[in-house]
View 1 (cartoon, helix red, strand yellow):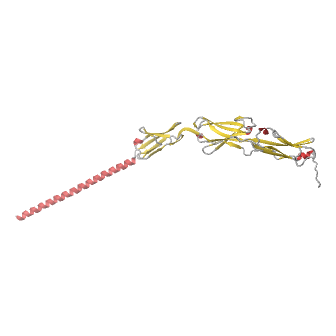
View 2 (cartoon, rainbow, N blue to C red; view 1 turned 135 degrees about the vertical axis):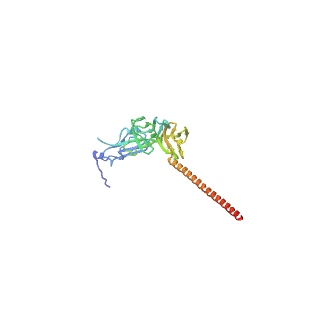
View 3 (cartoon, one colour; view 1 turned 180 degrees about the vertical axis):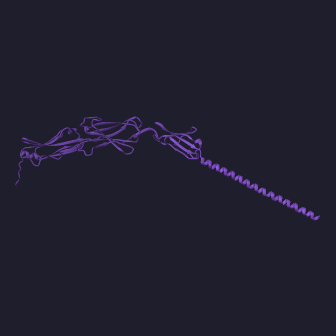
Length: 357
């Protein structure tokens, strides 16, 4: 059997040197394998090997060589590049490989100095990220979601937060933000996220906290009614409804004419009278403070009712007079007839007496 012998020049040998990965992202603790190979053996003596901070390896016989790290936890691989090399007499070829080791955080927690805040206080929110790396590639992202689901995102790069550990390795991080407690912050959700911005990492998010909902207490603000005046007529209906926005939920009281105090949010009078006119003051209050509005109620005389009443009285008087007139006429007629009957009877008696004579 005939064989084919191919003799490579040094330049040709270098052109056949290949690696399985030129760049590789490795999660902390994962196993890694990299292969360095040439297409065939050189005609001269050679060395094929891996130059690395950890687990360097070399062969004089094989055309392929694997570098292995069964449980990669050495951050040193991020500090310098590693090489696959081929060495022949008077010549050495290299292929560069870049390893990027990263670690997801053990935990991401968000906390507040207090569970409940009062309006006007300065709130401090803290995000604690444990054992994440490399620190120099870390960005802390703060997300705010308000009551209308509007989202605001703020990113804090390395150097803008406290880090405990070497920048090329893993460590602990504490990031803080300060928020002015206002009614607009009540029931707003905050969340912090650890982002590792690495060239090969497609998904930057490596850990997020649970959302933290803020509770802010603030004094009531009355939304209705407004300060003003209401004009009514006697007999009209009066309805006053007081409502306010506050946290905790406000309580209500009304001060009405005659210093009448009502612990309710509304007033209802079915038929107002002149004594019902005056100032009606609604007060909404909670532990944070109070708010008040004043409504002035004017009650005018009901002229229509007076006219109707006068007309009715006149009608009654007229009917009474008409009834009296009718009664008088009836009695007068009976009296005349009675007198006529009496005179007729006397005339008949007189005639009878004359006949007897």
